[in-house]
Length: 462
Ligand code: OOG
Ligand code: NI
Image (cartoon, rainbow, N blue to C red):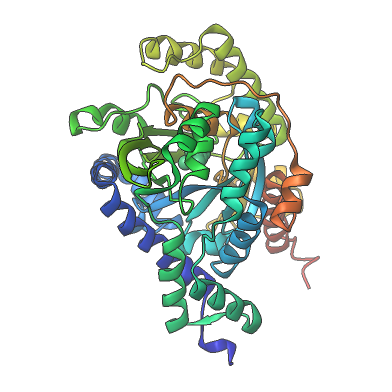
């Protein structure tokens, strides 16, 4: 097989992301409403700010601005997780970051499969936040074993998906026809099943242990539980949701509204109660319901250094000591105020964020300048080098927990002892996860090197 006939992993990912989007819009019509709202707000925001439109045009493709940025799934076994690693690799998506959600009362730990290079992100940024259930956190040993047995008995991939995966790995890629079937077959893994694979009794017991456990164990596969387009004005979309017939979660997760956006802000509409059938003790299908699927939006800002991230975590904790957002939204404004107050402690101009080494930047020579030199700071002072924030492409554990919580029903704040277990997760995954900070630091350093290389004093250039 000649590798030049292979479809690029980026193209396979783009096709997968678009197939997931149309499947989910069909499955969850409210998600379609959210997508239209996002497109409308994005268009308005761009029209009101030609400067933003121009800046985005240089880094993004404007007509794809409202497309999905991520989705999320939850799997039940180490074998499922490691198979997914192989599947996503065919689409140019690699595990980045480790997130321990047990600390926040959610019995999973997670990574994000995502494109890593700049070029790949630009072609299609789709990533999948993937969580592995921590059965070890179920206290009841008998229930734990029942859950394990149920999960071990299921096969979440079609036979053809497995064959195509093996073919891709053996040949180093897939041609266009195989890539198209691969996408279709993988889509099956993430499809919704309205017939549960457990009895109503087992469902009830799993649900009582934790709603998330019931969600992972009770179905044939890890249905996609949300997709997330990018919004250019998250506050506007949050405010417009109710008028469009969708009910937003109480508050936006992450940092407050700022001049210089940092990290990631997210909100969602609440998960829908959906009709599901369970088989009863007499072997008869009975109607019931299950709540898992929702729609989310995100707005991203600069990637923070460990120092910036520590400051972010400190300020977030500080605001949550003042007030914790209530699930019903009754203290939403007070929470927003407390968050704003706390984040007064985070510099809100790019120059200070840079000189205090709180965020990562991409440096580039200013085209109109003829100045040369070998000292970066001097070149910046003289206007020969400019810097732009590097966008944060990962996730935030406290925010993720907030998203999980508000979509599991707001009353289920269970406590698990925090038990991060990255080594075990990587063992199950079958590979180490990429360290996000190291990755952003490398991007920054590479841009500095390229800059200095290009602006070397003439006498030294040869
Ligand atoms: C994943 C929640 C995390 C995000 O955007 O932080 C997430 C889940 O609910 O399975 O998607
Ligand atoms: Ni999400």
